[in-house]
Image (tube, rainbow, N blue to C red; front, top):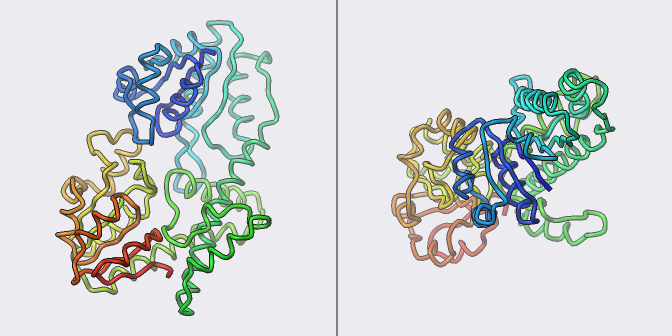
Amino acid sequence: MQISIFGLGYVGAVTAGCLARLGHSIIGADVQEAKVQAFNDGISPIIEPELDALLKGARASGHLRATTLADEAVRDSDVSIICVGTPSLESGRLNLDFVRKVSQQIAEALRNLRKRHVVIFRSTMLPGSTRSMVTEVIVKLLGDNAQILPWEGAEMIKYACNYFHAIKVGFANEIGRMSKFLGVDGARVMDVVCKDTKLNISPYYLRPGNPFGGSCLPKDVSALSSFARMEGVSLPLLDNTLSTNQAHLDVLLKLITSKERRKVGLLGLAFKADTDDLRGSPMVAVAEALLGRGYQISVYDPQINLSRLIGANEEMIQRRMPHLAQVLKPTLREVLDASELVVASQKCASVEEVLAGARADQVVIDVNGWRDLAKAAWTYEGLCW
């Protein structure tokens, strides 16, 4: 199948790589020439496990190319998948301008081409957005020949999944904080809770530790809460999901500052392991807060290459941490040697490397349940255990 993918960021790049692996011919489309050039060179514009190899193989086999021209992408494909961003507005609602613009470009191309074409919205949007987008943009340009399907259910499933993920993280962290207050190991409590695979279903997010972050959960939780308020629907539990996540981040900051150590090393900066996505990362918020209070910060995250940050990811870090280049260190040992307090949010190195560099005069705060860190000579403390 000939497939065009609009938006070559964290969603589009992975979608392109996976579909190309299945044998589909992919043409990527993006307004940023750097992303297009990376695709045409068979290089991933982002960091995700195995993605470089997927794109390199797809490029070598002739199944992958990219362009900045929307009409070319539509002309040479049978299906267009829209993967552009839907960032939050100050009100908490979603900014659909990028989706609207791409939809219009696709519709204009189809009006001239006069061919059958399938358009798939991969971008996360609130219920009713897809129908509205098709009606206001595509049907307006193409007439009643555009077929409208009942998409609200699919949109709601996406939000239900993301809300459930966000709630599970917040729930586990609240249990962890309460457990520690009682002198109980919060991680062991949740381990037992997760044994119930019949009712609790999955233990994946049910681990006390990092606050949730990234480009999906904070944005989608905020968007649906705002939507519910505007529609007069009361969702008191969900409305507090961001509050409990912020409270958990505040607890982490309070724990760090309570140690009265001014030189702090962060192991892991991205919002999750094996990616360079810094958007919505709790560790970026921690670093930002500590720098604002005059702390000396050093960071080790082997997945982050400043020269490869691109798009909204690069824009965010330039706005919030323009001095990242000065605090990001190339080796773990540099961070450990420079730190009085170490905050471990990711397993971004082997435990042997970490333990070899630990000192008796140091404190380590484990945010990720990395229990092997307790084997070193330093003072070990878990965030919720």
